[in-house]
Image (cartoon, rainbow, N blue to C red; front, side):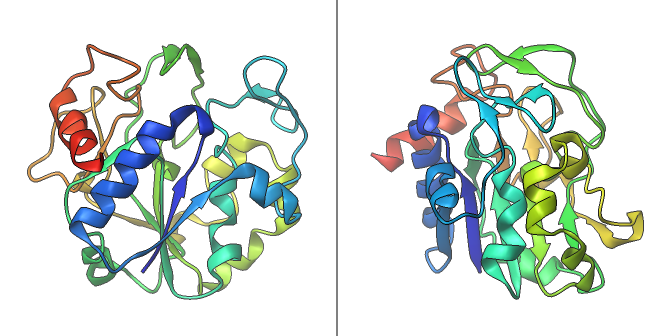
Length: 228
């Protein structure tokens, strides 16, 4: 299976942990980092942004907490066919993600953990704004059905021009086209209770190297040690 991991050059350690923990549990996956500069050079990512301070996305009229906030929606364009997995970089993989292929429902355009919003307004990570929007965090781990015709409604123009809040809410899909994964596939550490046998631990409030008092920090640090 192809796996795309969000990449932000401010979070190199997080990416290294995500990559290493993924490879530890499933060596046969094909991994691509979503680097915004490379995608821009290829003409795939051309959203106007203001980067004089924190990243500010002009089409959204809102800040972006990461460089890959939008590029994740290029996954079906990059992959073209079959199933592909996107993950934020602030995760630790704890199980073989190929299991998701056994759970994949071909009638669905995407499959996600449908989180209830447990966030509060404020900051996260390295002082980034905690922006609240519909279906928050659903798009942080996405199993994409790149063959599904509904995903053809998401054009390259849409990825580059639609507000981010629309993209993260999967505006191009009907509710019936969004499949559901159990919470073990995107456990929001510090936001929701730990599920039984988590497969992906998502440190959405910030990885422990940025947030030293993060709960369950030992999971991330153990994976960090193994990545060295």
